[in-house]
Image (cartoon, rainbow, N blue to C red; front, side, top):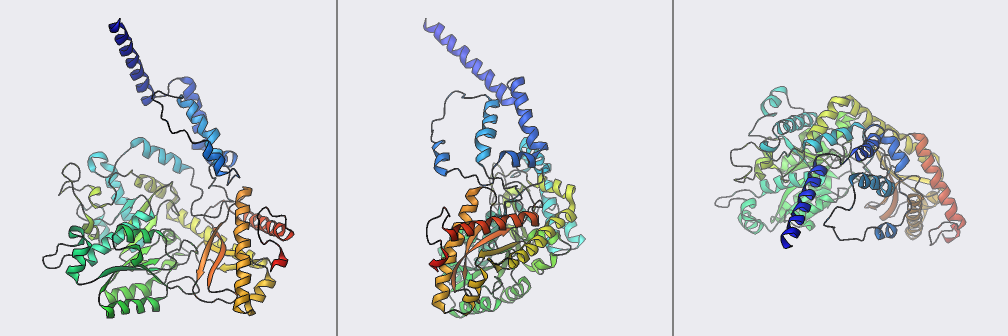
Length: 561
């Protein structure tokens, strides 16, 4: 009897294995195949129509309601559903509650529509499943990555043909690498900067080997700092923590009224550290396209100062870097070819799927400062790309960008950049034509900020006492915060909001925090008609606020001010 039970169990296990192999290698049956073909046809060939029809912009479904659907934490030992049912469930139950970042009415974040062919390219990359950590798991894709990195490096640094012939496939040098995103790219650059600033001295083997306490002792300092624009991305503070210097030593440099780093204050800070004598400035980070306002620091002046002081200069061009492909606006990034390293995000204005970043170095030997080896995978003397990257395993996103370059060309990318910048300027003009809005930051690239603040109150604040300005500003902070939330929850369109901390007293603005609405205009399907609709909706929401019919509670009547 026991032998019979054992045999039946064995037969059952064999059948489970057969079923598993079938699921692993192909659709279970024709019905499953038909379901997959139906759904994937929509994504592969009708992407934008699919997103418009099936995915809300910011549908007003409470997070609690969605969370309550996702509380089961038990993973079943046996299959629960067939593949066809799982895929249908994603389309019917999850996609409608995702965010349609491809909508032309979604203009609030640095995530937008991607060209439909990016889905095809992403699928190919997933199917090939190459791991560019090592030649043994990628072969040609590692070679392609070096080629694509060289192409973008050439856009940034504009070296001559001989330079790129020497380094494009040089197994001993690196012009840069792909990363998972801008945060990792920034971290890689500042990792190099830290190691160069705290390198070997006498018997000291360098900070990468011996750590920060030994490095500070060997270099006769108490701390290491990195100077950044006050408008820098928050990822730079993360870098301070990860690199061990402390995020309190990521020190902001004041900005001017155009949100650009003040070179005079930067020079004063560097001089102060020199006189104090116990602080090492490991790097300065300039921004080419600030996250909140889209402004570009005065790179040529900052670069000249850093060269004079012998300080490493990194440019966070995660957002603005692709502007270099615009024949009309490339000059806005003038001087970027002088910096030591540059970050660009592929999933921003290279319009790639999430998530891809890149970091580039002016000196092809820079990444030697962070090289690592392992006997089983990236042995000393090997030419594996993983020896000089923060990440180990990486997918071959280089294939996506290489293909996109071939499909659209730099001219195509440049036209997308031009559209965003010119649309932002037209949007700013429309905002200024309407009496209830106040343009807060004028667009330099394709980001701008504004707020609801009717013209009579703007005029009053231009002449009012500091106390009255603060009172009015707090009121309109509340108005704009509530308005942005209501527009988001209505689900027709989306504009983000942020809080600008103004360091200088602007006419009509207090020194301090100002809540603003923030628009990021990168979707080529967004037009002025769309933007007028968004402003019309905001005007209607403000009218509801004044009438007291807003769903948001608080001081919502004009007589409250």
